[in-house]
Figure 1 (cartoon, rainbow, N blue to C red):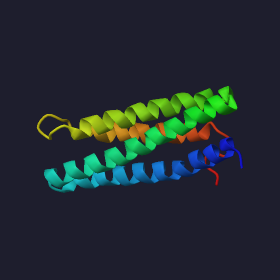
Figure 2: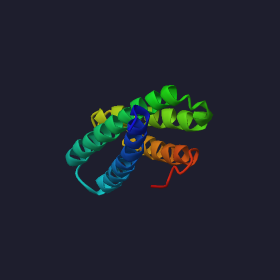
Figure 3: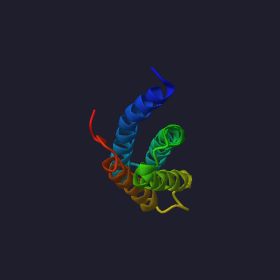
Figure 4: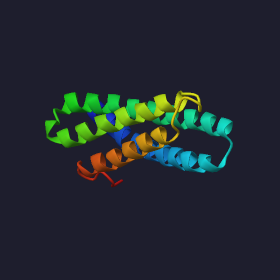
Length: 131
């Protein structure tokens, strides 16, 4: 098995972890509307960190694949994923702020936009939603 195949399989497999993390994170953010603020902030930090780390790992693997395979035909996927990573980090940064300083809807919107951009980006690659 070549390095390219290993990276492609890792990149393909981690996408499911990314999707699970953002769905769980969004569920936690929505559920946080009905819970106490301290628990909600802690949960928001954890899911934001998990999601951001997984997105960064995907970005690294994707960049390696892009340069190794010269897959420049995938530029719509690359652009949507870069925007998704940026939105994930905006949500994480805003999620770290204290409840008095932060608007709680900004992380929700940032993570939701990131999730939608990931779904759009997956649609740009062959078998993006396939196994």
